[in-house]
Length: 353
Image (cartoon, rainbow, N blue to C red; front, side, top):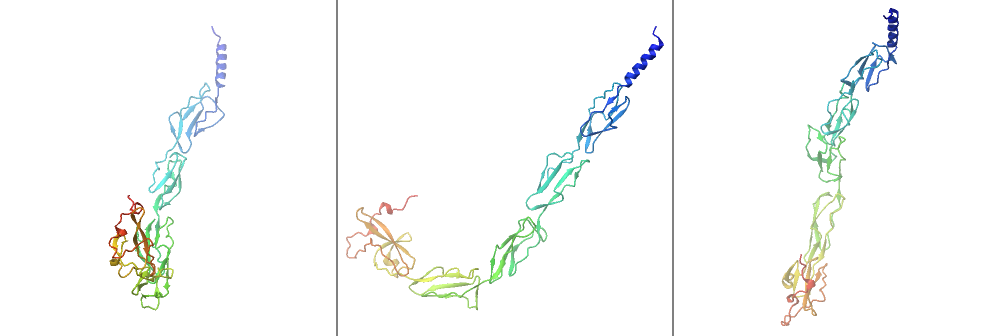
């Protein structure tokens, strides 16, 4: 029979042993808080795990009790970041991001011709909301374009109300007597302003001088201005070298200075020549002579190869040099073959493409 004293002593010692098994500081869980947090706990004491702001609990136990064994139960609690709404698309812009989880930040940029109306970056906050609120990409607009002095708007059509959008254009033209310096077309820029305006300046030209052996006509005004015109002509037996009409330019001079050059009288009375790609009889085509600047090709014989070739002659202010190889036959020498009737030399044949 066991002594009652022995039973009481054993119970006391067991209680002392059990009472001495305290629980250690609980394990740290990522993104969580333990309350109360101590270095040790008596059996029966409780701790509570809560997720830090910006994180939410997923499974596991939140409240643990220190057991008599002094070993905390396994805690499977997981705290995961809050996820903000999808923000990967912004109209007329670009969103740059890694994830949409707390506490990540996303940034915004707009396409060319648009600007950020709002913040350039936003963070996913503790409540799972983007802060500041997401921006929008608004179109860049320009006010109505200013009109340069002495100019008028030739073409302009606003895109939105009275304003213009990026890359819209306006076209100007100067009033009569004024020349434009700069581009006649301006554009709405990404900064909401217009490109550089042109300038309109009054331009005068001197009265054109009369060419030798010719004449010039121009408006009978006290002065001649930008875009005014003058017309030239030549007397008989002379041809105009240059355009027959010239214009006063923005530089204050005339677009050209035509002159009158003498026509050429031909010493050759009879021959077949090439003129502008066609065979013509010189006595018919040029019976009144050649105009200054005209070119004809004379036929010459290569006696060794028994073939013909051509050499050019150009009328230059009353002078033309007949090729030395050309031989004009007398009308009495009917037995001689004209060079134009001899087969062409191979070097004188047109190339085959």
